[in-house]
Length: 264
Image (cartoon, rainbow, N blue to C red; front, side, top):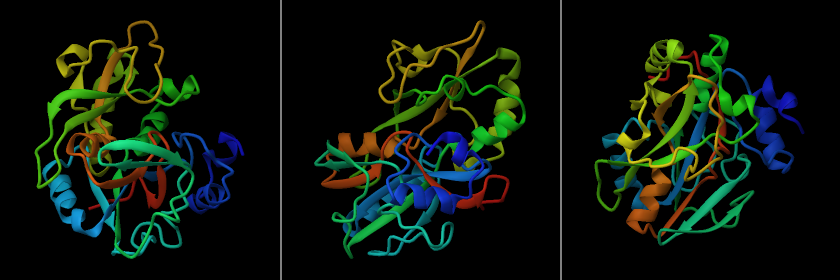
């Protein structure tokens, strides 16, 4: 299955493709106009601490839905989907270590698990593209770059860690427009957290992302950084979380929400 097949597809088509292991690629650019989400799955005893972590850090962790324990269906924003199978790739962290990536987590899910869906910046990329702004990683056919920053999130219970950011190069004359567009959508990370010098975020080499791939800048481009939903994975590593299951970087869940809908 190609990106062209899924670019204008309905989210249910993406769920089916992932469930059948027909799509094992980043989801940037698919299901145009629909909200994409980061995934975090935790045992119920850790879920309340993580919910407080999200509440205290809404830029990287904007909560779209929290499932009932043991129920893998996000009934509010994606009825009919199954979060155990309907993402392209998952990461499994145990005691803070990434131990494996896989295409489903059916055998790891039980009646004690709670799933969180957090808004993803892939959602507002549709709006940027519709306004004629370039999305360099899509143009170059790569998984966009993501970095650990030097900014600390506000801790909650067992969870703490550094803010993770995604980066998109933009022509300087279009940056203000990108800020205005994204600021209107806080439920998918909202406005940038930093513009310009990567060193101010503790990023010493822009060409060596911690996740994703190196994106090529066009002449005059400025790096623009948004809070990223990989932040919970960084928190899992720093907090030595007993078990956390997440999306693999760039391999998101597509919800049934339109990005131009109000999420509040």
